[in-house]
Length: 198
Image 1 (cartoon, rainbow, N blue to C red):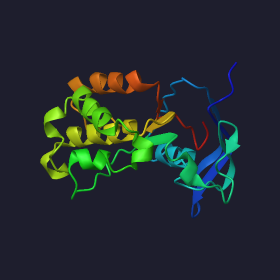
Image 2 (image 1 turned 90 degrees about the vertical axis):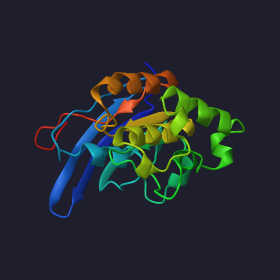
Image 3 (image 1 turned 90 degrees about the horizontal axis):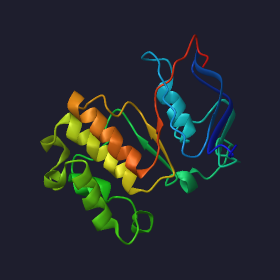
């Protein structure tokens, strides 16, 4: 059995007096797709943010390829390219075109073929004619697809997707997920929790 790409042990997180995550254990192997399902407010997005280092854990370990990225003082900048994340809110810069939002990452991250890769991703997601539009000129579903393109352009090894189909028309859901899987098998964002436990 391969070593886990991402491993969680005893992950705990509280906000004030409210404990959102309690002793979460999980192993995710390279190439594995995991769907996490639960009610609104059950801790799905918080767990994703802990996995990506955007939210510090109160206790426990988050190991990426065997390295504990939750350890205090760990240089999280070193994993930003390796773990992509797409939020339910699109987080696009309103003063930048869709293309510029995607091309914002450094050239060393995007690679020498950045322009060709970005244009190919826009075409794959049906947005080739919308690259030069600003976010307020795009529908919610189009903005969500741009956010997905931005994450994929970074060539991450692992993807965390926070309900990325919520703003899409039903007929686009399968198509967008299929395009994401073409790049790799992602880690999805929803899981079932019962009174704070997985």
